[in-house]
Image (tube, rainbow, N blue to C red; front, side):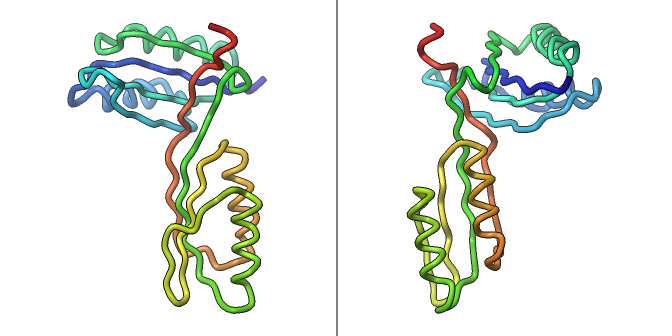
Length: 162
């Protein structure tokens, strides 16, 4: 059975660490669904949020292999339903008089913001769960999507389990 797991990996913040971690996934043919990296409150430590999918054995192997890396300080793993997850997406659409109102109503319903606009293009920003980000793409798919940029999933374990 294919499952998803989120790995919150604290690593030393220095060059080459991302390459080593992603190389581990490549060498072992582990799938990375999403990868986001950023500094923590301590500038010497970064947090990698990795979302991966596979069977139970594969997901256990990922954690074991990550623990072997010298640059890895600490790993927390949790299931999607045990986390608060968010993704940021910017999406540029071409609009006209006939679809402008529909786009604005979609943005309002999805709690998305129009952050830039010209005579015929607008850039929309949404920060939400990966599922709702996917829904936003579906809702705008009938409109001319010009360009899109998404972050990886960021996640923290829910507070009630700590």
